[in-house]
Structures are given as C-alpha cells and as structure tokens.
Length: 387
Ligand code: GLA
Image 1 (tube, helix red, strand yellow):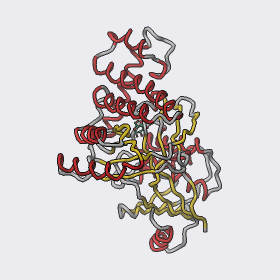
Image 2 (image 1 turned 90 degrees about the vertical axis):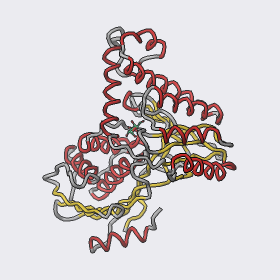
Image 3 (image 1 turned 135 degrees about the horizontal axis):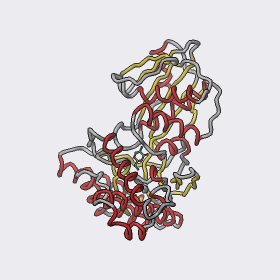
C-alpha cells in the first residue's frame, strides 16, 4: 500500500490544498463462478489486499478535477456537462460515477480527486471497479450522502455500463464495496444476498498476472453476454418460465440442446455447469474441503477454455504448471479472461516454492515475466483517513 503521507503530499502538490479524506477500495480475485454474474447466478470472489486510493476535497464550484498519479494524467469536467472522454478513457469511470449521482438526484459539489493504486491495471483484478467504487464512496462522503454498500455497487456498475460501454455484471463492484477480511463472499447475483465463507488460515490465494493484455476485451465480453441472451431466448421456447440461464438445469440443457447452434450451446453449457460448480465449491469451502474445492477450480478452467473460449495459451500454461506443482489444490483463470491473471489455492508452507517454480517455468516457455501476488482477503471500501 502506498504510504498515506505520500498520498496526502501528492494531493497537496497537485492541488495546493490538503485533502479532506482518503478512501480505498480493493481489487478482487474471483475464486470460482466466472461469467455467471450476468446470468443471475452465483460468484465466489474475495476482496484483495491491493486497492485504489482516492484523496478528495470538495470544491465550491461545479468542477471536478482529477489526477491519476500512476498514469500521470489529469482530467477536468463540469458537473452540468458530463460527456464521455475519448482522450482520457480512465476518467470515464469518474465521469460515469458523477453522472450517476446526478441521475439519482443526489447532492453533488465539485471536487478535487487524486488517484493512486497498487493494483495492476488490466490484470483481470477489477481495477476499474475499484476506481469507480472508491470515487463513489469519496463523493458520497464529501456530500454527506449515505448509500448502502449494495447501492454504491449498483451505482458504480451503472457508471461502467453506460459510460464505459462494458455490459459488466455486479460481481466486481459488489465485492469492492462489501468484501470481508479473511472471507470469500458467496454472492447470489439475482437478489444480491450474500454469505461470507472463511478462508482456512493454512492456505493462500496466489494470483499470477500473465502480463498478457488482450486488445478487444470489451467487445469480446459483450459478445459472450449476447451469446447467453441468445441461448436464453431459444430455451424459452420449450421453457417459457425461465428468466435467466440460472433457471436452467444441466438436464434441461441436454434435453433441448438440438435447439441451440453449436457455439451458443457451448456458452450455455459453461454457464450452467459453472453455476453447479460454484455452489458445490461454496459447500466444500464451508467444510474446509480444499481438495474438493481445488478440483472444482480445475474443472472451471477447463470449461472456460473449451466451452466459453475466454482463455489464451499463456493462461492455460500457467494453470497447467500450477496444477502440477506441490501444495496446489487447484488453479484457474480469474476474471473476464482473454489475458490477465490466474488464481491458485496453495498450501501455506508450499507458497514460496510454488511461486518460484511457476515464474521460472512460465519464463522458460514464453520468455515473459509473471507477476505473483500472495493475497489475504481484505475488507471492502472504506475511509482510511479524514483531516
Ligand atoms: C468481469 C466483469 C464481471 C464478471 C467477470 C467474469 O470481471 O466485470 O462482472 O462478469 O468479468 O466473471
């Protein structure tokens, strides 16, 4: 985590005033339940102990000035004229959040915002959701608004959907808002009820960033979402009562498989099997059955690779190496896919060796450096300083 004093000093240097508060919102790693959130299914993410920090101060006018320390980029917009920025795309998360405040008729003054992060960007660890949730929390604190964690998450999700153009689900924003230290959250994305499940103390969640960044992530993501909608439409013929793929069982899918084009069938099969795996994995974790949990992670990866087609050779290789290493219960790609990171569950005493081997083997195979984070699940968004 960057030193609080450095965040404060960076704000002062930039804006010539002291910040009023500093907020942090964590990234996330999803243990299982991938591409299920927008099918009204279950997910099992944890909030990472890496976060986006926002130092903030209200202004008396209706201007928002933002500065990203990591990107060395600034942006400025008027609250009464918020448009999408094409030259500062990172700022659209902030613009979108401000616009969502206005759309909900929430009080909103202008603000100076300084952003700093120790979350790698584009690594599949939901850095954009962390940014949107942190900004939403900072703006609500400055304007004495008191949104529930769930409302904050929905507001940040709406900002990303309408302002950035990714038809993302609710998982990332929800766990950034409501993550629990040392727990994973079993979240039901249909009604947003959730249940924290403890992570046993003798394992570590090891995230490995492949360094691969795919160009067309947003359009590929939206395309997968459309495929699920197409499957839903076709299955509604024989099953008119279904509201989402969540409502379809594997037996029903098999029975009606001839109605679906091959690719659409594969996409639906991933979602429906992943829903079953996620519930089984949550039960395994409740019983601290790490071997059972790990086997479901491995099956999830195979399904994402073969049926949902969101993996890439580098992720497949990282997962295969991880699965063969001592002390690893299971490994899979995490997040949207097309690059980004893998997540592995590793016995505490084996983590060091595991990490070294994984980095070495990956380097030998691809001449690329993998970046590893060993994580302990953290709390969701919160204020870390007030001045
Ligand atoms: C991205 C989205 C999430 C979720 C995952 C895939 O991270 O933002 O809503 O759909 O992909 O599980």
